[in-house]
Image (cartoon, helix red, strand yellow):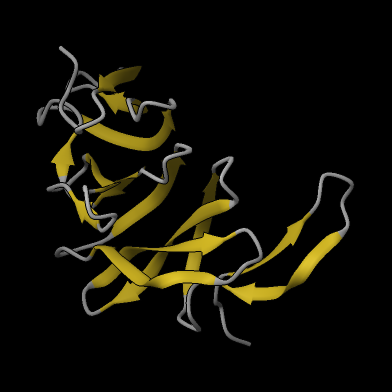
Length: 174
């Protein structure tokens, strides 16, 4: 059997809508996450296999499970990128966060320009390079601001839960 990312859309009463679909385009995938908006669209992210371990991929989808565009290669740097999470607002903007082998948490923001085309921000690190960062989660509000929360392992071995707020353009708020 293949380990591709599949999905099924359900209505509010649990009845299936449409057919089962392949979000990963037939590619191998692990650890999927999904975010949806009120415009009948959603985004699926997952870990995929790349030439140097695991990377992060995403697919925008219509509410019926049909893909919007093609699979997006989000992160495929040297080493593994793991444990993705995604958040989306009603305008269709979304942000993806993941943990990397370099013991940090990184994120990227996708948004529409004035022509409706999706543009991607540069990959950013969320916290201090001196601490190991793990297990990120993300949430986004309607204007596109988002918060990333992660576990930090400090140099003294203690752990903390940390959070950082970002503006809709992806820049840190403070």
